[in-house]
Length: 106
Image 1 (tube, one colour):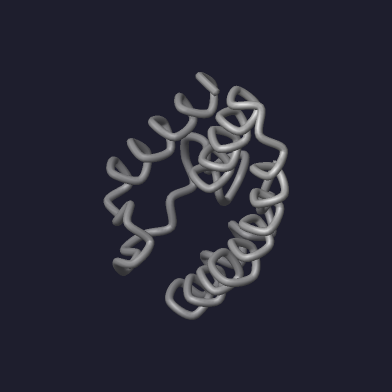
Image 2 (tube, one colour):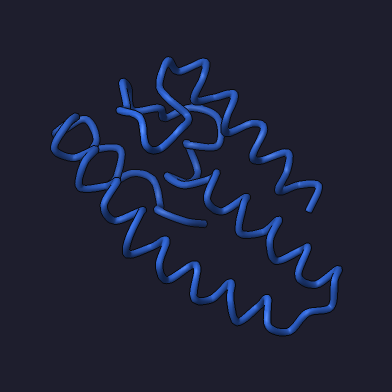
């Protein structure tokens, strides 16, 4: 969990330094390709999922793992894929090149 929290801090700071919004409900102003975004297009979502999994395991709750699986499906289809379409429309070839070079997840 500590590594995931570190990833969250690193990813957030990289977005701020890159000059774009961290809040996904606000418009993106740049495609950030440095920091953890060199390895994954979604390090913040991955970090949150690992923190959630760690808490679920620490609390020894089996239902938390089932809920996590459902949340990940909803996040993938309802948030991440939608964000990718938005970024492609907004940034065009620059985002397509980034998407081709960097994995969505690890």
